[in-house]
Length: 483
Image (tube, rainbow, N blue to C red; front, side, top):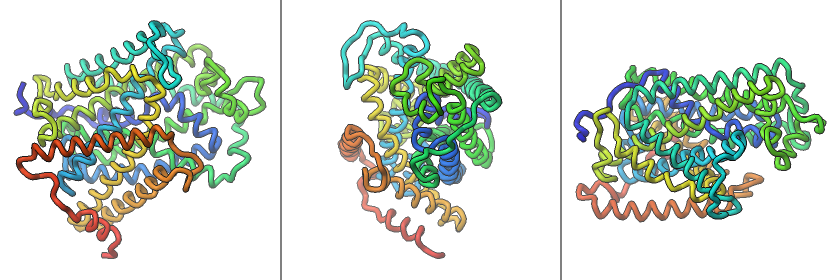
């Protein structure tokens, strides 16, 4: 293998769109997210809150597009932070990028056993190993998830064009599948009453969803890691990101509204139905699937099943691709072993792809409960990453004399600081908080990061790391200045 040839340009605007939307929307969009939103704000509050949250993600996306045009190289936020603030901050961003994408990858890989339990009669539920955190771990289900991880890695090391075509096809499949069921629900469904949760103010419900909804978009920025592979003009990436975010909003809104258009006869309203989901099983426990079955019968359920499977597969491919390009970029900078920067005959960092698979293949053995705690950590990681990206955009725009760009970057920083306070101050500004285990995992990952950073310092013969910097203070002054 040789890395002299570099990454090959092959990704079209349509492919970039497919990777962005396919990575940001996964298992939870059809099974978990809509139900969570509805229980807190109803259909109207959820839709409006998602729209408000989308505006926040558009701010982040515009900052990303600025940096992707300025620094079109693998590594995404890691590369931007390294170039703008230095290697220390670059490592910090890379560490939490890895955590965020790994968590989402593991969540979708371990969702396949749940898919099997719901739709395939639990055919892989054999060979019980143990119960961990109240979750039964079966050998068959662990092998199913591991096989999905390995097959994804094999696909990604063999060819870029095939992966490109698969992502586009699957993205259109789940978009069309959800849209067909949504239209059927709008034509045949019951009125969406009540529009909000009766025992709370409408504005408060909208704001609550707006605050938590941006995390449903995590992954739309994953294409920044493949910037070296874009086979189109850089300026077009802004449009690609905007369209991807708006499509993601559309998908979430369609699933959310579809979920309230039908409910079993024993309930007087969708609200009674949603509040009793924990006591239900089968299709009744999945509002979107129950509605699809009510309007389109078995064909509707099959269509959503295929859409859900496509969502899982695109998430596996998208997150593995993003992680492999991140590890590739880190290896080029000698943060990882140089073997992970090698490119195979297909123009792919195959060893970096295999590293992702190696870090993931045994994760199914820890059980779904633990994976849920790990996934919750992504909200913290994404806040930090988006904050750094917006700060990088603000500083870059300041150097370029772009007042509008600087303001956009500073707005993103301010929003991420507010979100950080919301997440890390349980019960202070929010009525709920993440599980204690999630905070423990965040601390554990941070400690591991310090240990790995110390290892890097000992190997840093070029003295790129550990240098004092006042960049944070300078960035704050730029954001607050009236120039």
